[in-house]
Image 1 (cartoon, rainbow over the protein chains, first blue to last red):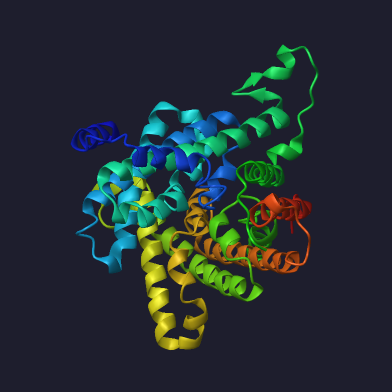
Image 2: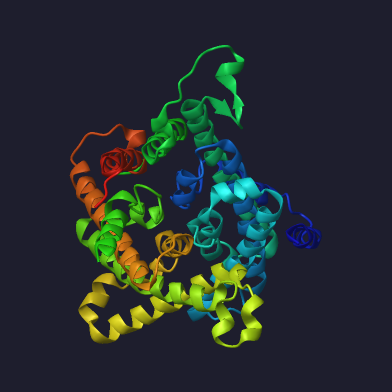
Length: 220
Length: 204
């Protein structure tokens, strides 16, 4: 369904990969990252990253929802009365989330079980609502699609980095593959990494490293 | 009664929305710069959680669950509407937030002035929807669900006021440049969450 929508949109706007549009994808990966710079969508980023597999599934689910709701809202943007726009946006997002939820339940049941309420919580994920408000309400469907995909990728990037360290240090494995055992080294998992506290500290350090590299500073 | 107290204590300290489940983190980080505003948002969250969770409990148990509609007619006993859960819950939450906003505006303009901008934000606070979704997964009755809702809200209020208090003091410390702001806040939340771990296994 989302693929079909995406194709139609791509055919309509020919110069889709102009310099400006490429920026829509590359900016959210670093200088405009939804998690570390815009401070959106933190809840799920911390909660689903104990292992890499659920983190990957969650990122894909979020990217699909963000991109497709961005397109729908962007198509309807001139007809939505501004007073009730939040509830219209929520209805569109909830519809996509229900579809993603049913798909995950049907095809990757064990991961769906592990993600528990967090698939449903994509509805209130601030990335989705934030991008709808900040971008899709004022831009054409083509760029909105790219913006959704870009922000989904930026979110996924951070999720995978955090998931990598938590699973490696917490359980000694990557995507369920026991790295340390394969190398013949005995490793006792560090339980702290699997706890909420470990996740927060890792995200803090990721932000630290990223900002040392790109020079972004907050006053105070 | 003892059961209710136990659920209340558990939802405030042990299953704290922030430190155990990371729910409502976005507004938690964004609005925790001053104690006063943090307290206002916290109160609004307590209220909305306390109202929406019992309403969603009623909807789940009398409309959405399989066979829940049999009170209308015996023919509906096989209907299972639980796939509509997300959209119904979010509609209830958005409507309740809107109603609360109008009521507060009418009856207490002073409170509205201090809370005003935060109220609409609550509709998209994951702690609210998350509370309803957790409630469905647990075998609570109506009273227990209400206590759970209020308790989770109070836990969230405690967490945000505590963080705001620490962040007000942080202004005077010399934090490395790139870590300033968001980075150090995350590490702070991590440390506070470690503290809350001591409530683990706590029961009445």
